[in-house]
Length: 148
Image 1 (cartoon, rainbow, N blue to C red):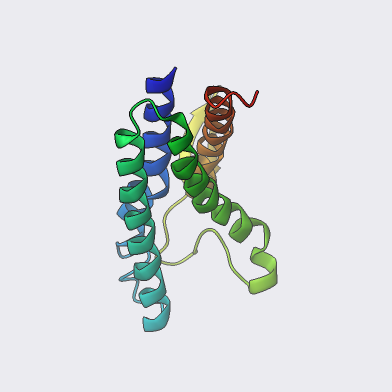
Image 2: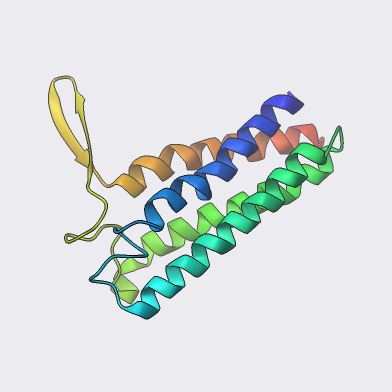
């Protein structure tokens, strides 16, 4: 089970770092002409921070050996990074935000279910299953540490 947890933590780490970096350092975010320079600066800062946190997490995951207590740190970092997404999502009305821009933003994710076209926000499409995976991983790390 230890190798499974390390693989799950690696996937979670990539989900809050490498995948968003691909979008956030593109013309939908960091070089979006409709964004103010200061907003661009903040997104690059956030992306760089998450990527550095991810490198630390990957180091801790794969150098932990059999020390399962060390896996709590990358697990907690994943909770923080992915939890930040949900805080931003659920408080967007307070600060006038939105998970998607109508102009120059990431397009909706479109797929077919039982012959019907469905369009969802790309962020929710990615982060909902990732959050489910995070909950499973937290439970597995707890089990490895004898807490369940």
